[in-house]
Structures are given as C-alpha cells and as structure tokens.
Length: 485
Image (cartoon, rainbow, N blue to C red):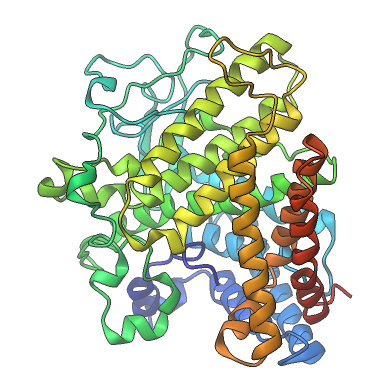
C-alpha cells in the first residue's frame, strides 16, 4: 500500500487486542474482515491470484460490510469501526470486478458519516494549536510565523465547543455565533516558530524509521517515512492512542476524498457533500504534531505545521476547499479573491517544502507537490473567467509555463522509468509493487487528463501531449492486470 495511507493503525495495539483471547471478543469484526479482504485483494491481479483470488476477496469484503452494518445499526460506533469503513472505502475506490460509481460514492459517504458521528474531526477544539477556518475562507496558515499567533480568546464556534469524550465517541454541541465576513480567515493558532533551514528538519528523527525494530520493518516496510508513535503504554494510554489514530484516520480520509474529487471534476460529475471536505468543520492537529509538543528541544526550533506530513495535509485541505468554492454560488469577485489567496498559499507551502532536507520527498512531499500543481492547474483553468489580471504582474488565469514544464518533465521521467521497469523485469520487486496498487489506476488516468488540460490552456505546450502518451502504457498495464469485470 501507499507509505502513509494506512498508517493510522497502531500495529502494537491491534495485535495486542487480536492475540488476547478475551480482548479479541471486543474488537470490531468488520475491521479484521476488511483487512483480510483488502490484503487478499492485493494478491488478485492477473499476474498472481487472478479471478479466483479476486472472487475470494469480494466474499470477504461482503462479510466485512455485513459486520459493519450490524455494528452500526446496533450503535457500536467507535474508532475501529471508522478504520474498517476507511479500508472498505479504499477497496471500493480500487479497480475490482464490482467497481461502480454508486459503490465508490456510498463507501465514502458511509466513512464520512462515521467520522461525523464520532466528532473526531474537531476533537482538538480545546487545543489552541489546532487551526480552525471559516466557511468559504481559504484554509491558509502561510509560513506559520510566531507573530501570526494570538493569545486572545477565540470567537470561532469550534473554539467555544464543549467536548464530551466518553470512551471512543465525542458528543459535540455547537454554540451559535454571528456570521463573519466570507474571507476573514481565523488564524487564532498558537504557532510554532518557523523552520530553520540551516539546522535541517526533524522529520527523519520523528519518523517511524528512527525507532523501527527489525520486526517492525518486516511487518510495515512501507511506513518508515510516516510519523512514529510516542512510547505509549498500551493499557494506561489506550485513550491517547485512539485519539492519535483518530487524527491520522481523518487525514488519511482526505487522501481518498481528494482523489475522488479530482476524478469527479475530470468527468464533470457533481461533488459529494462530505463533512470531511469542509475546512470549517476542522479543529484537528496535523499528523505527527503531538510529537513536537512532547519534545521541547524540537518544539523550540521547528514548526509542526511545516513538517512534511502537515504540509501534505494542508495541501489536501486546500485542494478540497478550492474545488468546493469553484462549484459554489458565490459571486465571481469572491471566487476571484479566493483563487488568488489560494495561489499565494500554494507558494507558502512550496517554500516550506523546499526547506526540508529529509527523505519525505519519496512520500508525502512528492504528493504535496503533486497537489500544489493540481491546484494551480485547476485555478488557471476553472477560475480563469473570474480572475482579473492583478497589479502584481502575475496573471493567475494563465499557465506558469516554467512550473508547467517542470511538472510535465517530472511526470514524463516517472512514466519512462515505469515503462523501463515493466519492459526489463516485469516480475521483479519494483514491478510487483506497482502491480499491487489497484487504486493507482484512477490517479494515472487523472494525471493524463491534467496533462491534456495544460495543453488546452497553452497549445504551444505540445510536450504535454507527449507526456500523456507516455503515461498511457502504465494505465494499459494496470487495467489489464486489474480488470473491472
């Protein structure tokens, strides 16, 4: 799987419960069954288990769905049930024999409902370091300078929310407030100091690789660049572990939702009205942010909101906000203002990414850069009718040719490398890793669509057509290995 998507599960806690004869009875059956379903499904390509294996995974998935519905209808709704919903949503967004638009939509809506019922999207409302945003505002933090914070009491509804955390659920009661102006974004966050480029970044020291034992590397080899877990006691700190799992689950959910949003825009389909896709609902610490608070030596020199994991999460939230505003009924002047503020936020995030010296480029930094380019392409194409040429000298309605060529060159290199791998050693480990990613089919198709969008915006960018053609063999390979019938 992807190095970060599935890392919301605390593996020691999972196996401690699963291997305990009494505690196992208290585990969500749908979580175990959904894990079995997807792990079985990943071995079902035409080059491995084939149709028989895919049929087996479908049966397991149906059992997981039945167990999920039984727990949900009985009111047994907790974080593990949300984890099961996430895995089933990933299954539905992958290429499998029963793939359909309604099934994809239904799985994401179900996952969104569980997260909304649990209230975990605003579980850090009482923490001044959790950012909150207003409706229709750009979810922007800029460069998280110390002076951006404030010690004044907040009037944002999520800051005045009274939270009651009982066992694994949150009951949230909102207080009414006066309606703010559309683009007065709340930045009432106790920001960490900015990153020091000369000192390097602490992401590597805070990653799972820094504490991974041989057994951990063997069981989760692709999670080494994800945030590590604090040294929790599985019994004494059970609640804290679940809370951190909840945070990571929400941000992983954004990955699925962001991919679905891109596909719907490419197909000109209406967006899903999801709770997790609205920045104004958030009051949540970013992935790995709790690691900074417990380490004063790092906390005093670096910004947790500019870690590779936080920057990726900020980019996803920015992308979802951008797509929502584009499809809203706001006046053109408001959309123009939103587009320009969003563009400036992409610059701030890109600058923060450039200051990192860790290995995150292989994982979250790469994805963050991808979505930055996706946002810019979308602004140049979708918002161009609302955007006047500003006095700054930058025309946001036109493609930045330099950045477009940089993105296209990178996509072309990736496509050519994958083609070379498939042609030279189709049964080797790199090819096998690509083979076991049935969820990448739609991403690759969307990348082709984006390359062609660049060409439609600037017909002199003929290189974009060449890149799209070089991506086609990868899509053909994946669709042949994972038939949707």
